[in-house]
Length: 561
Image (cartoon, rainbow, N blue to C red):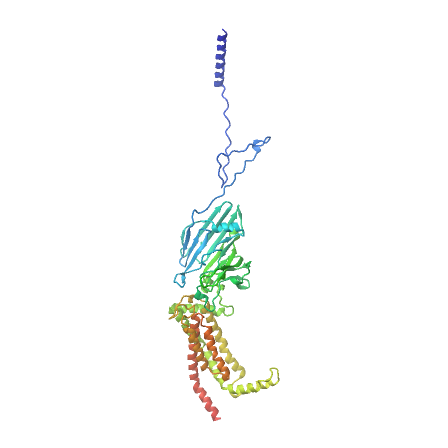
């Protein structure tokens, strides 16, 4: 009975529990709120859990933990060469440090006939387009970093700019360099370096030096050593590398700054704003028979990513003037004589375009200049003949007053006797001095200006003429300086002189001295002086022949008196 009751109780209990579960279901659990989207530059970490809120703090008041940023990594897996080809130049970078390894000029050739290389030989130390922040470990990391280039090859059209960008990011360090090659020939450059999101002060470099001057170029008389150069408010400043202070030469607020050699330059410009630059030097070890020497390095401020402009190429006055920014002032045409030098440079190029050879162009232009100056030289020859005629009497007067002090009143008597001597020969002392000096004053500036043209003109570099392979280097046979000395000797023998015999013998040493001085001068200069002397000999011979009848007539008149 009891068992029956127990079974009935269990059965009733199960019935009640089953009915309750079927009639009354428990509520569904509330869904979790959606997670906010992840911030850019972050990644979710698997298995991470949210920490519980502290006791006593409402869950809705507890801030969500900040996600830890994961740094973006931009590194090239291998070192590669990046090339830029343009009609006038070819540029090659290495992505290790986004540094320059080659910049060749198509129009200019070296001694081997290859395109002229603007980038100095590779070696230890800085390279062009290195970036410095002032923090040694970051600078070292940037020099060794494998940047990712935007292209491996870039071909530039003649009339449109193209850009090349290098990017690098690792850890907290981020850097990029952008080069925009413009149709004008200038390159626009911007640099940005950041650490932990903060931009670092940065400077971009060029150096050491520019180009590869050969041993033959360096031994030419007048060779300009590689130097740092800048355009300041007071003019162009040049700083030879060997004379730069150890800490460098600071150049605040300049229009442009860079490095130069005799014929080439690399110049940084900050358009519309003054440029802050520093010049310093780097020692170069001896190679072969050469001596150790120093080369300049320029570092310009590139902080803020503001674009810089860069010129790399030959110091051609006309081409640089078209680029603006006063870049043409790097060509040392001279201050007072520059207004004559610049037109003569254009005239020489004009003649060469029609003659076809730079040597013959020098000869033609020298003849044209001397032809324009021929009337003045004729008057100078006439004046020389007159002065030579009264020379013996002039020396007698000078001998009588030789021992008289300059401040002695008797010097006035000497001037009176000289005036009377001029009057007897139908000459005026004042006008004669003007006639004698004016031709010289008018012709010498043009002669010196053409001399300067041949010194600075990059067109003569590599130009051949007859037996001379390069008019910018010395004559390999030394024929032009020797012939120039001989022609000067002939000129002196033909020129009437008022000097006494002893002084004339001393003057005869001048051609020998000048010929010795010009042995290592550029052959183009010697060709110019030789041509000018030959013209003077011919003109003097013609003038003396034309004046002979007049001189003979004057002598007959004197005898008749």
